[in-house]
Structure formats: structure tokens, C-alpha cells
Amino acid sequence: MTTPGTRSELPVVLLSHRGPVSFERDESGDRTASRGAGGLVTALTGLVSDLPDAVWVCAADSEEDVAVAAEREGKAVQVALEPEARLLDADGDGTAEGTPTVRLRLVEVEPQAHDDFYTVIANPLLWFLQHGMYGLALAPVLTKREHAAYEDGYVAVNRLFADAVIEEVKARGGRALVMLHDYHFYLVGQAVRERCPEALLSFFLHIPWPGPDAWRVLPPAWREQLLTGLLGNDVVAFHTEGFARNFLLCAQELLGLPVDLEAMTVQVGDREVAARHYPISIDVEAMRELAASDAVTGHAEALREEFCGQDRQLILRVDRTDPSKNIVRGFLAFATMLEDHPELAGRVSFLALLQPSRQDVPEYADYLAEIGATVARVNAAHGGEGYQPVDLRLAADLDLAVAAYTVCDVLMVNALADGMNLVAKEAVVVNRRASVLALSENTGAHQELGAFAVTLHPFDVQQQADALYEALTMDPGLRRARREAAARVVEENDIAKWLTSQLNDLGVTPGADR
Ligand code: G6P
Image 1 (cartoon, helix red, strand yellow):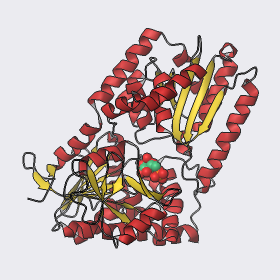
Image 2 (cartoon, protein in one colour; image 1 turned 60 degrees about the vertical axis):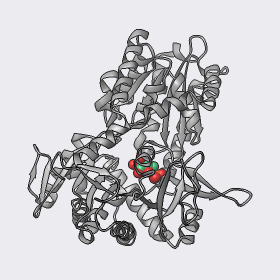
Image 3 (cartoon, protein in one colour; image 1 turned 90 degrees about the horizontal axis):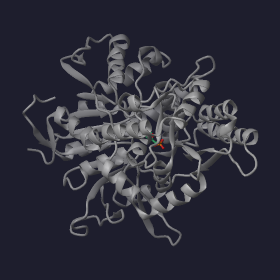
Image 4 (cartoon, helix red, strand yellow; image 1 turned 135 degrees about the vertical axis):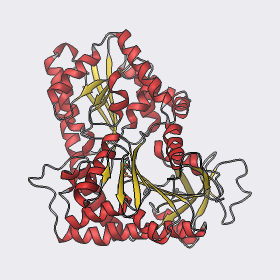
């Protein structure tokens, strides 16, 4: 890191597995482009759009992404983002005056290698390990298949993306701010440092980082390689201080490196690597604009009619169907609450807006089946006379989700573990019914919002049932005061702050090299 006060201007090379735009063909065969949703994409798009020299490296996710990459022989393409995303001509310039653009380098990964990388190693192995989801008596089982997937998938795909990043850094004269994202790319930092020693390398992890014992589940050679790969960066950043500390303890215990837990650094040869924490957030203004849009208010009207009549209350959850989200125990807690408080039957509904996720990973497909079966059991046991306790909707519909945030009485987030959880932050800034946030103590968001929430203990179904009851029966004045206080915290710590504090600490202004 540069010393405070000396800021250098550097071009940005960004890497994440999912990119900000993906291409498809519509029914009439025309190419379409759709923008990815979510805080990360919004924040980083804001950073790189219109920086003439920035590039975003990501995986070619669809067949059409592959076709686009092939047409330009693997070189970066220029995409206009507004009013709708669209691919610009090879020369790019002039065709999108006044609209933000982003330069994308779509990296094609051979399907078998991608499958090994994504469905065997990154998800489930790293994801499950880092969210503390293995019971260890029966899983994970590392066989020849996993060993091959690690080498031919994870390591090979990291090498492929490192090569793309290196090419982009070299094209910018070897000096660039390289921003690497998430657990898919632990090995890229070291590879880039070896070939581009003048690059400033910053890595951000969006999921939890557990302590050394959790990592002992992996073969020593793997965990040492993953840690060493990360230590190739100048800064390794997390959502919470606890994750950053765990990372340093891993460097100390698993690699025997000297760490300074006060300065939050680790000595790697003659270099010092910093472990930092920056809690990610949302674009509050954009979320409120969306909440005020016709599409969202239309959905909100329909939801109010369906769920929020006289004397009725609505519990909401919005999640990917990820086992880490603890969706099944959430329904069991709701059922327990209805058993303990039969007077609530017919008066409280649970709307679950769930986006199917990673269905090519067997554990995720099984979990989705378990969700469906659990909902059927709860509805059979507690429904009747026009009352369906749980309304399960499987879709990715941001407008509907935001509409539901505005009208719910309780938002349930009971994740087993979650790096941050942006759903909690989104809901508190747009809710209009003084809703209560029922929030797992194991989310990064709990550190900022726990004081204004009803805390959930993710493994204790009875506690969650009691907490839901407490939330539903809380004094309206207290509910309102807490929601407003939580909204203020999110307003003050928004996505712009997440990004600028990282850039300030790095002493860098994104731009052209100077
Ligand atoms: C988490 C990860 C992201 C990932 C997202 C969706 O938020 O931190 O890196 O993109 O889940 O998962 P998917 O596997 O669909 O990209």
C-alpha cells in the first residue's frame, strides 16, 4: 500500500466469476443483453463504467457470451449500459455518446473444466467449508474425482483467468489496480504478481473466512496453495474483522508465517500483506427509486390485497435456494410458532420468494426438493378454510421482491452463515409498514443491524419460533423506531463508502496510469 497522502492514478482491471452483462438470443434470433443484479455488480459497474482504460474480466456464462467472445477473438468488448445493455461495434467509440459503457473480457472456459471448477470445488467444497456446513461424519469425501477436479478444474481455471488478467495488465504497461473477487479465484493474485510485479493487487472475499481448524478438512497441499495464492495480493479484504483475523490465524497456523494481529498484517518474505474489512452495502438511492417505480408499486398493491388485510400480518423471506440460507429450519420455526400460538392461524402468512440456485450441484438440487416437501407438510398441517400458511414462489423477480420488502411485517434472515446478507439492508431502507428484521447472528449484517433486529439463532428452531412471535407482537412504536434506526445505518454506510474506503486505503484513484 502507498503511504497516506500519496495517491497514484491507476487503470483498473477487475475480475469476478459472474460479470455485469450476459448475452442471449431471443425467439426471433436477435442478440439481447441483460444486466446482472445485485450490489456488487452495481458498485463495480459504477467504478469501471466510463473509465476509458478499465476492463472487467469475467466468465463467458452463456452460449451467446461465448459467441461474442469468439467474434472478437477473445479480446475485450465494449458494452453500453443504458437505456438497455447493448454490445457496441468493435471500435466502440461514438456509438454510445452520453451513456455509461463498460469494457468486458469474457473468458471462455472448456465445459468439463468449468464443471470441475464450479460444481465440484468452488460449490460445494469451498462454499460448504467456509459456511461451516459439513457435519464431517459423512462429508466431504475427497476421492480421485475431487483431486482431479481440483487440478484440472480449480487450478486450471484460475490459471486461465490469471492469464487473461495478466494480458490486460501488460496491455496497460504493467501498472494497474487489479481487483480480484471471491472464492472462485484464490490462486490468481500470486500468478499475477509473478508476471506483473508492478501491479497493485487487492482481493475481496464475499463469503465467510473460517478459522484454521475448518481448513484442515482440505489436504495440506490444497490449503497451503490456496493461502499462498491469496498472499500474492497486497490486500486481502473481508466483510468483517472476525473473518480478517481468521485469515491471519490461518497464515500463522497453517503456513507458519509471522502475523501482527494489531496491525492486521502478515509478513510474506520481504512483503507485508494487509488483512482488512469493508462491509459491503447497497445503493440506497437506486433501491428507493426502484421501490417507487410503477412495476414495484403494482406488485405491492397486489401483495397488500392478498396478505395485509385487517388484522393480518406477513412474514417474508427472499433468498437463493442455498442450503446456507437455512430455509428449511425457517419453515419449521414458522410451523412451531403456529403450534405454540394457534390464535395466529389464518392471520399470519409466510411469503417465501426463492430464486433457484446452482441446480447442477447435487446438494443444491436435493435442498430445493427438501424445501418443497417441507412447505407441503407445513401447509397440510396448519392450513385450511382458505388459509395457506406458506406461499412459496420460485423465481428471480427483483420487482416482486422489492414490493414484498415494502409491505412485509417481518423479514426473516436465518442463514447458517452469510458473509454479509444484502437482503436485510435492502428491506430496511424501503419498508413502509415498520417491519421487524429477524436476523441471524451469523450474518455479517448482524454486526451493523443486530442492535435494531430480533436476533435469530440459526440452529435453534424453538428460539426462532419465539423470536418470530416476539417480532409479530412488538409494540408498533418500537418497531418503527428500530426500522428507522436500521435504515439510517445503511444510509450512512452505503455502497459508495464500501468502495471509496478501499480505494482510499490503497492510496489509489482509478484512472489512467500517471
Ligand atoms: C454469492 C457469491 C457470488 C455469487 C453469488 C451467486 O453471493 O459471493 O460470488 O456470484 O453468490 O452465485 P452463483 O453461483 O449463481 O454465481
